[in-house]
Length: 63
Image (tube, rainbow, N blue to C red; front, top):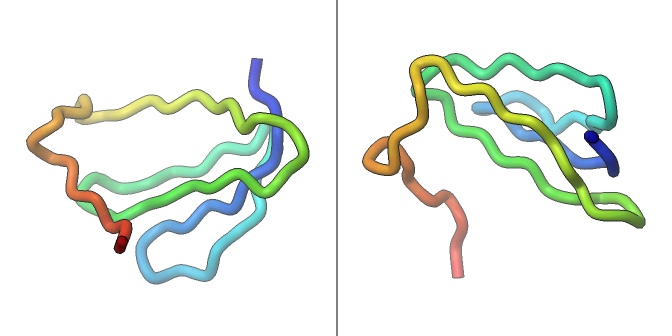
């Protein structure tokens, strides 16, 4: 079950509000980030094609 609301960032596009039932297409090689902006846990389904591999992950977070 998908629950919660979040802010989705894809590439250099402006962040968009997302929630249950929303679909966001992200092309391979495009940076992306999602953060919880609701009162409940953000739970979402991610389908990756080509499949996700850890060596393709690069954290964009700064400490």
